[in-house]
Image (cartoon, rainbow, N blue to C red; front, side, top):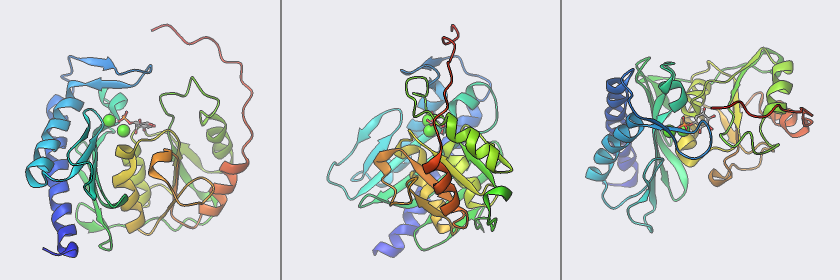
Length: 278
Ligand code: IPD
Ligand code: CA
Ligand code: CA
């Protein structure tokens, strides 16, 4: 099998794994008995995250026992010197899921030599399967998708998110959220980075930015947006480094303007009340 045909194979297996994970998410929906905080307040893990991850790992490891894996709940596995790295979020949008707010997905990305090249995001609650591989375009339920053609911030609908360390740092994205809300038709906070990226890829949203992200949140979405004709960089438009956790993604047309807005925003001076009791 040469490299080109392998990409199709990787995409098929990623799809099989994402569908398996999604089936588990549906199975546990509304049935959770074990919701715990992993570390920071609000950073939840449930038996659905764990079970979906096991189902996904079983598929990936059965087909590619030599590959390396970084999965949110079980960490690093496999061969450290492999050129293939699977970045797996079994349940992106755990907070939504725990509240039965149906906006969550399974996200599976494959990095080859550190570059996202295959991505599958499956939202089982809306039956939407987003897929992409390098040079093959992006699809939603097997139909080609493309980013929007909105060309100004004033006409844009954006999305962002807030990392779990938001109460511990001034770099919490609150100022950026207010600033962009002022400049655009709106800024959504979906609560599932993978779906945010998929929605930019299919043109429902014009742009997305966030900090504090992990590779499993964004690896699949990055290739999806790129293959849908969008642009992915750091906030200052320099090449995005997966390890930075900071991402600016747009349809390309508003990239410069959104970057400019993010780079010039002034911090908010807010005297926050003490955190509410649990
Ligand atoms: C979170 C979601 C959320 C984003 C957070 C992520 P999780 O992932 O993608 O939208 O704002 O930064 O950690 O914890 O639900 O897998
Ligand atoms: Ca996530
Ligand atoms: Ca997760």
